[in-house]
Length: 89
Picture 1: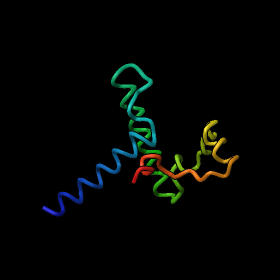
Picture 2: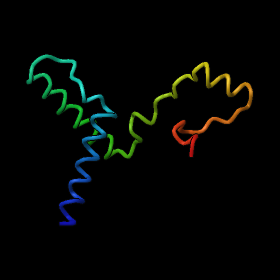
Picture 3: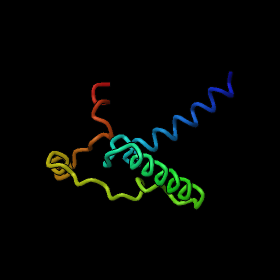
């Protein structure tokens, strides 16, 4: 049973990487054939990326610009936690 769970967790990780890291939730092409080609080409690119040892493309993106509220906190040297959900605990 343990092997099945380990295999599933590996597959789930790959599915999550495709959905979030490579925009596979929505398809920009009409038709099943075109969508299939996009999925296959994206899978090939991910495999090449993994084999080359490069960091994933999502890690090389530049960070988002700070919001006005974040700039306000920074100007007044008020520390901002990583997650606002942890403020009350």
